[in-house]
Image (tube, rainbow, N blue to C red; front, side, top):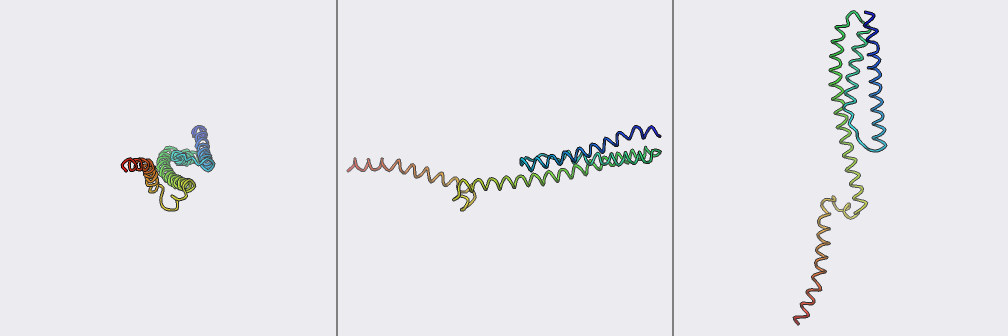
Length: 159
């Protein structure tokens, strides 16, 4: 049974190392998101964290009780599966929350830009309602100016 602990110790160390790397990657993504405003999905990171936490618990149980290694190997596999599922659910929930936040921020930014470019539009209504009539009024007034001299010429010729 001593050989089992010699073989399994590096695996447990790797599992702990990988959990640490996943948390580091989450922290790096958060800093990048705050700095640049770019959203990166983190579902896969949370999935790995859940998987490796289950594997670490199973590995530690095998190291603590080497005579019952086969029982704890099955328990460790089950913990890996449930950790994987829970991590994936948590990652999906976090991704959805960040996606909604990003969409709200983009919508607010668009509204601010519209308010800066067209103050009259921002005071009256939403940008989609007022852009079409303003363009139509300009084209109608330009068309009236072009037809007005032609009508005067026709009136002068008739008289």
